[in-house]
View 1: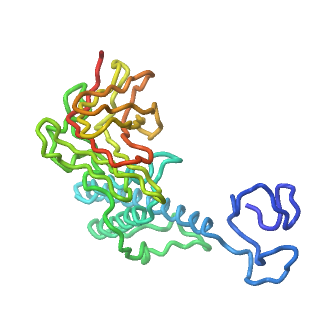
View 2 (view 1 turned 120 degrees about the horizontal axis):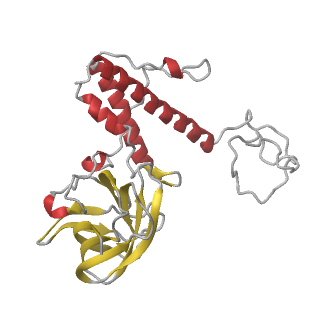
View 3 (view 1 turned 90 degrees about the vertical axis):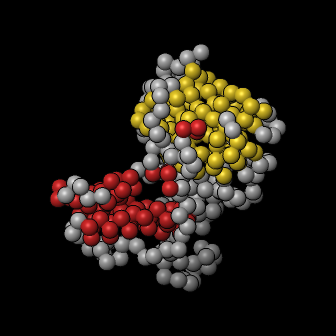
Length: 317
């Protein structure tokens, strides 16, 4: 961070850096050195600085939750809230899947923070254990247990099935929509404006309907669904991932990505979806021994697109 000068520049000199790029604190006057009057008591903070604090507090939430889960297990492992609390430690891909892929919807973040806060309170009450903030306390940054999180009026942006992995199917089948009723367990839906639709189709042969909304100017997310597989899947013996689909409109392209257990991408790309019913094949061109997630998305669709799905399988052909 720089306050008055840095990177070899003189005070007040303008460089090629963006406005405030990389800065957390700012000087107290507005036009140094021509105007040396102090309008506020500096250094002045920034929204970026406040968001760093939010990130630290969120880390503390997870630390408190992990500590409380461990202590609750040691006291009574049969407490039902323990299993639900452990699910909260696995952050959904709708919030963040990797360092540069994350939601920009503050309501989604606030809703998940509140769920963790409520779980801290609930698990603490059910196990008769106080929230242990001692490891996180300091003279400068105390963590008062009485103010875990103020209530927020945020919608439940995550689908109920998002916390669970997909059901287990026969070998070679990643997902069979004809065997699962909506809402389809194991799928996370990225929050978009207007929202995506992923529901039962009501059509024979293709039970699931996926609607990608038209991209709206100013939207911060593009429509995507993420399949969280049950356990690890070794794609190495196979040559392709095959989707049985029906395109109810004209031809368009979808994009895909496969991640490992740490949400690190193995492979990504795009593929055409012809009009009508048929199969689309995503070639497996590199070793993928431990696949845990599959993303299906569209980047800024120009028009609304609808896709019906029956099954996602692995093919040796």
